[in-house]
Each structure stands twice: as structure tokens, then as C-alpha cells.
Image (cartoon, rainbow, N blue to C red; front, top):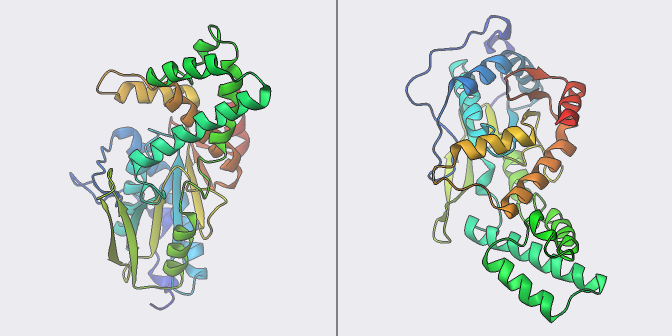
Length: 316
């Protein structure tokens, strides 16, 4: 693939949103369902002209006329939908695009990764109790009961068992050393995929991961006509992998994230205390990486400066 002719690039100043068909291509996570709403369209329409301008500069600098964009954010913020729209807009503007889901790249399928997260939290909590000198047979018996009821991460239980605060603090620290780190996510594989893409590879083997251990396979994807690779992923802006040209952060405050998850919970259950802890840790990672984002989009659709983002998060 030769370097992209600048004369063939679309004019970002005159770009207008194309009409949307009933369905558009989306990320490559098996079984993933994308439900695009007016809020997703508003966000994509707001950021795309500025994104196109930045992408054009990257495309001209890359020897193969290629650019890597990431769309990151917390649970329920609309990463899949927004990334799908941006990818569709790039393609309609004459720049072939592909949407890669980072959720294909943990080392473990979801049920095993969930179990590993819980194991790390609980073992870290117990070791914290041992270090503090408060672990004993009675505490072990109470913990087993709390494990069975899935309440060992619940802050409310600390009133009943004050030593549980030590357990939760130590477990949280252990969990924070796993979530979004190379022990959990295969950042090396994603770095290699990005490297191949930016070096002009016409085809790349991409991982597919379903819910069970039998749903793991690879597909050889044709990138010969792709100019823009979009990675949609909570950890898309992480320091643990390289090659992203334009990071986009879809922001939501912890309260907005909790409200959205409660709204979309079809079985009527609220998140467990452990799931809430996971989301809080992931939110902290996003905040630590936010300074690198080329664009930060509030849940309202407004484009935020980093200073505005910090002020908004401080208020929450």
C-alpha cells in the first residue's frame, strides 16, 4: 500500500453527517450487540469533524497512509456504539475503517477472568488480615459465609465486622494491581497488531473470544483497503501498549455510570459490591490516563478540555 495522496483526503471543514442505514458494521467481539441511540449519534457528530482533521495529519505522516484511533471509557458509556459510528463515517468519507474490540484480548475468557479477579481480591484480603495479626479461625468462618452470600466486598458489613475493613482495603489493593494490567490483558498482542497495521500489512490475524473456553479462535482479516483502525476498549488509552495516534475518552462520572448500569439491568438486579469495586478501580485508571486523550467527550456530548474534565470529576 502506497502513501495516501493528500489530494484524495476529504475536507473536514465541509464534512456533514451521512444518513444512517438501519444497521452499520460494528466491533468484532463475538455476540456483541450494538444499539445506537440519538445520544451516540450526537457525540459522534460532534467530534468527527475535529477527529477527521487530526486523522488527516496522521495519515499523511504514516508511510502507508494509516491511522489508529481508540475510543475508551467506563462501563455503559457507549464505546461500541460511538466507535461504530466513527468507523462508518470514516468509511463514508472514503477512508476504509475497521473497528477492533479490545474485549477480545484478556488472557482469560470472561468466566475465568471474573473468577481470577475474585480470587485475587479474596486472597489479597486474607493476606492483609494475616499481616495485621487479626486473621483467625472465627474470621475465616465468617469470611466463608460472606463469600457464599457475595457480601465480603460490601462496605455495610464493616459495621458488623470491623476487621472486614482491613480485608477489603488489602483485597482492593491486590485487585488494583491486576485490573487493566498485563497480567489481565494481552497488551503485547495488541501492540503487535497495531505495529503490523501501521507497517502496511494487508492481512492480520485477529483474536475472537466468546464467553466460554470453547469460543476462542482467530480470523485472518483483510486490511488492504483499511486506512483507519479504531480500537474500542476500556483500556484503549493505557500506557501498557503502543501505537495509538488519537485517543478519545468518553467520560461519565461514577454517578452517571451507576445510573446507566441500573437502567439497563434487565433482570432487576443491581451491581454487587464486588462489581462496583471493579468499576471504581477501572474509573480510577481512566482518570489517570485522561491527560493523554486528544478528545474528551462528556456524557452530554460536550467536548471538554482536560481542565474542564478535571473540574467535572472533582465535583462528582
